[in-house]
Length: 113
Length: 111
Image (tube, rainbow over all chains, first blue to last red; front, side):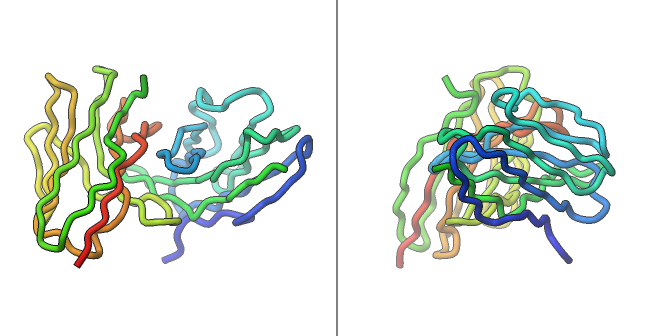
């Protein structure tokens, strides 16, 4: 079946621009997570949703970062006024109810120039 | 100090070897633990959960020592296809909310 999909797969943007990263979870998965992964490091938690409710946004680095999941399915992570330090792989994961396993998507590689 | 710490490796082993990775976690409130596998330029995938009593899945054995706050993964009879980065993961709530990842240990199995 279809896995988690993310778009775009690659995004190059200039410093100061806003970007929106999209995540399409596995159909029926209740929970959706956003992580950021730097080269040579493990994923770092940003935020997560159960259905449309944002349950924890403690990992968002600052108020330039926001996320939404308005209909409990697709989610968008928005970064405003991007900075070079925002360059990383942004990964989305989803989890079905009752399972402990999070299924990761292929990620969006963001480069801020 | 990172919440989950691992030896980055790389561990270079011949096919058929047994290799063990350790990981330590700093927060005693952590409830659940996992090993994820990440192939080069791919997404992480769950390898196995780690239970207090220890658990085995084929050639893979995971153990948890809560008193010492460390987790281990043993791979027996290594295959070329085991070459990957192994991520040690903790969670406060059974994996239902955020996962806390270590930086990963790289394994390279050679013929």
